[in-house]
Image (cartoon, rainbow, N blue to C red; front, side, top):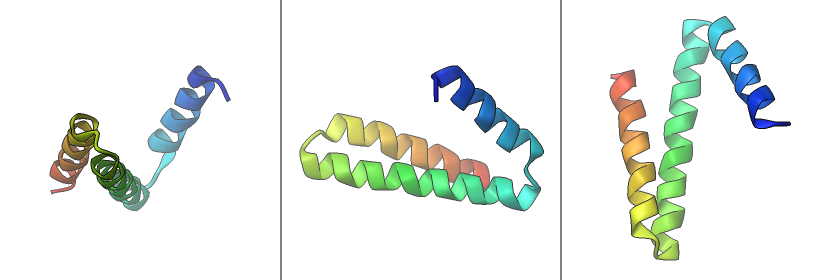
Length: 64
């Protein structure tokens, strides 16, 4: 799937999702970024891990 078709698909998912589904999507995104942070820290690339951690924090901030 090309980037533009992937983006269009994701935008459709978001625009048609129920509020509950949107919250679930945010939680899944935060978990994905948190896992990526852990993987990057274990691999020794702390700077990339920090970027993922900031993304996870921003998502949790939106949920709150």
